[in-house]
Image (cartoon, rainbow, N blue to C red):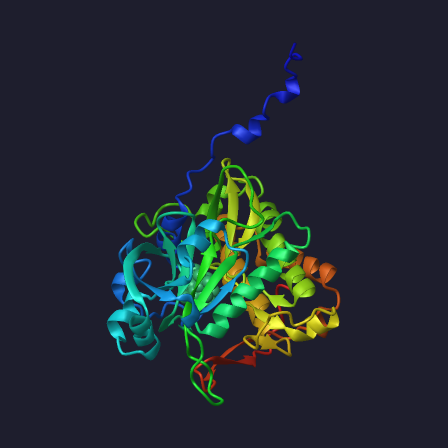
Length: 423
Ligand SMILES: Nc1ncnc2c1ncn2[C@@H]1O[C@H](COP(=O)(O)OP(=O)(O)OP(=O)(O)O)[C@@H](O)[C@H]1O
Ligand SMILES: [Mg+2]
């Protein structure tokens, strides 16, 4: 006989209560809940993307040209890809190769595109939806994933190339982060970059290899979980809706109306600070969790379950890795640092200025008793508590991009002389 059903077997009301707020799906948020957010630098709203491919004003979907190449004419990188993605992008002895349609249209004689067409066989295009970064494209069918493609045009401050070296590094970083798993913090998750394909280098001499390719990003946050979860990009918390500018920003709906400050600190700001520090201290990886690189994972009731990091083209502080005895592993030379200038840009400006500042302003506008210090002080204290000797690595003033560039067009940086506000 079955035992009588215990009272405690009944699911707690909390886990089944209906959502307090209807949150639009991720592809909608990516494109249309991002109004008014790109004001953090004079370059932030600049784009050389053709209007039809821009995430906000362009088509919601378009075709991504694809070829199939013999595997031995390309470089292939893997970090434990799901079987469905392996089968789709690396079938048998071949590799799929995808090229943004703007490259095909505007630069048909580009040598690596010419090599693709010469050695490859044209395949039916993939149907994609552009994400907020313009060059990362959500594939609309099959296993949830996105393709981060070569886009040699400027969006914001940078040209968005996807050189072999960058592709390889992202996959290596993904593998290391997967093995590390967040250092035991259950609020940490990330999007793995599981496959990379690029042309092999053929240029000789000292010049930087311009041979390019693409990355496959698994859109299931890792570690994998069960249950109803939805992703909300950081910027969609404070971004306005493209079609309904009067609608309240999501942070207002998701936060506890009785204590918005406590809510944002506990569920967004302090975990972001913790993740940034932990990743830096335990791997030497400099995460860039600005509003576009971090997502909230919420459950059916609108509660934040984890923060999900995306974009694994991180800076790598080699000093920290040496200090904790981490080998180079498979890391290449891309984005290695021997000083703390970039870590300051990433934390002080990307996290503090380009993300927390926007969140705080939104809440302060609606709660006039709140001041910016109410947000900054707890973050500074948490930072100091978890990373006491941070001044060994990070400069004592804020660093940021200067308007000068190196020989490859990469922005240089300078010391602003400002005192850090969030550490
Ligand atoms: N609200 C926002 N805040 C910051 N960046 C934004 C925002 N909306 C769109 N973007 C765009 O996202 C990109 C941010 O740059 P970043 O280097 O983090 O991304 P990426 O490497 O191009 O792509 P991904 O994040 O998909 O890996 C830029 O192209 C920037 O213009
Ligand atoms: Mg990004």
